[in-house]
Image (spheres, rainbow, N blue to C red):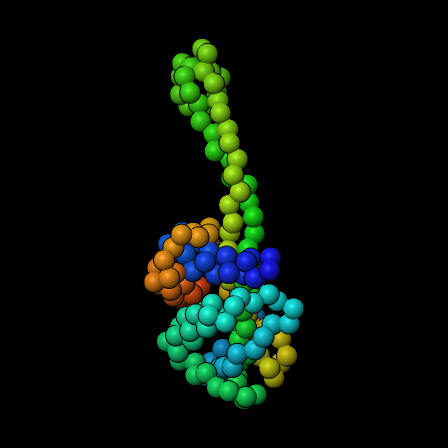
Length: 180
């Protein structure tokens, strides 16, 4: 049950991706990305997956962006690329502090009877990783990672919109530009 809640929270979080999303990518610089025209979905072994509804939403967002990049989805073992994804949630401590009273603002020493107050809270950061494998070479050729603070109150429509925007941002640099 804990895993189900974590995975549901993961998509709630990742679906809340927006402009503040952190995105990185990496790729095999020797790979010929011009030869990849088709792809098929694969499951990444031992990676946690969300429920069927969330899985469908993530795949639809990725399918849409890959189609814009000129890739066609195929069934069976015939894809030029194998595409899989992973989701996860990390917990981070957030420290909120403020100064009440005292003489002076800014950094450095304070004079007077001011009091500093600090509170901590735990925030959840959702992550989505997209991996692309070349089945002929049997190796990964591209990986994208997006992460964002969870917004558990986002409505389903907002989640879908933000998920689509987040995946678009993640795949913005796919395929990698050829170096001259």
